[in-house]
Length: 371
Image (cartoon, rainbow, N blue to C red):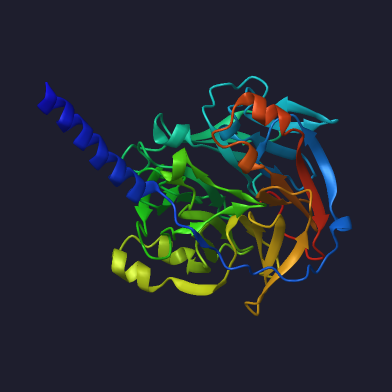
């Protein structure tokens, strides 16, 4: 019995050491790359005040606002449309969501929703609805070899013609970050750039407005791999990077779609595009400027076409600017998920941290609505 007890203690110690090494954090701070904001905080206005934390937002060319409630908040409502100051389930008669987070509206008038399925414990799904009829028009259940247990497929972009989707798998638990390329017409997908240097995480501490994102006594720390993913207006370049990375990368979509390229050949075509902050959501305007949410400083940064990184706007009310979407004109919408008050928190803590918000401000340059 003593030998068994000793064995179990040693086994637990080995497991704990492995777990902390694999998922634990570093105390290395991320470089502060904020600059004096180009826009005043007064440029920001409230779109929606909410009792629960939003996840991502997508705004149509007509100005219809859709968003998810963040799955880390364990919400009852999953995907909604903001109508007359109220969150209305979308579509009204559709309920089999598990844990959707990212939303996009394509140029064909369809709302795409990505269900993370609790880190791939269930089946990860892309569900597509026609905005006019509110009917499900396309569905892709990601095979287990593309997004199985331990995956975290949480953001994506749709090509201008609606025929291809590019998805980001953080691989939070699997430790296998990758880009997923999906051919809509063939209903087939494949993983590319898996564990490539451009998608891997870096051991930087996230200090979100004074809250260090380290949990379980230091055994788990958030330093996500591939997270930010954006597509230019022409659909020529996919911009992406790990949240915890210092650099933003890009690769031509024609290369991502080329199945004859070996992993090494595709990797060689990835371009180190420029500096970034610890970013969650990103998007691009029609001029090619990249907008990045700054989760540490409650700000939005802009990486301009000269590859200069500047703070665009900073608001003391922002806790964790998360998803971005352009709407009509040059409005940029921001979902503030306030994750430091949500991740692994009790319902009481989350209620006490309410309200949560969706915001918007004008950039001066239009972008593609829904992206």
